[in-house]
Length: 158
Image (cartoon, rainbow, N blue to C red; front, side, top):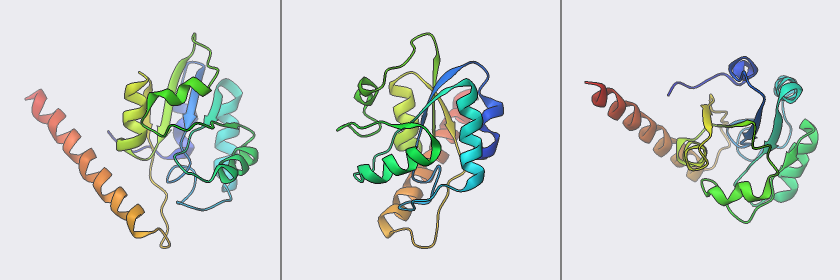
């Protein structure tokens, strides 16, 4: 699966959808609090035709709410974490609309999309030098797994 530039996403989602948007690595580097202006504009474009929710695995609920406020969307509050499909119990979704999960990690966001039978858009990951070691390690493992999945798909086609 090829990574998509975040600003290109509105062009990739045609039908009105419910969008479940990851925060860390997708909108911001891990732990950052201020959404860049161009990302706010992209989410505003998404909101014109779609319902957008933030879904995060962060324990910092106030941070998720602050980011949601910057974007003018709701942040899902759940005791469950991605990829657990029970997260969607907290979301009032229009069952007529398709669901799209947008994130930077196959292990959490990609599996979450698969479990809820949603489309998945893998975005270019946002990182910074201050990322903690465990975050960097999780990115490395996730990227290695993504390569293995792509390789398995290629082999399956042969």
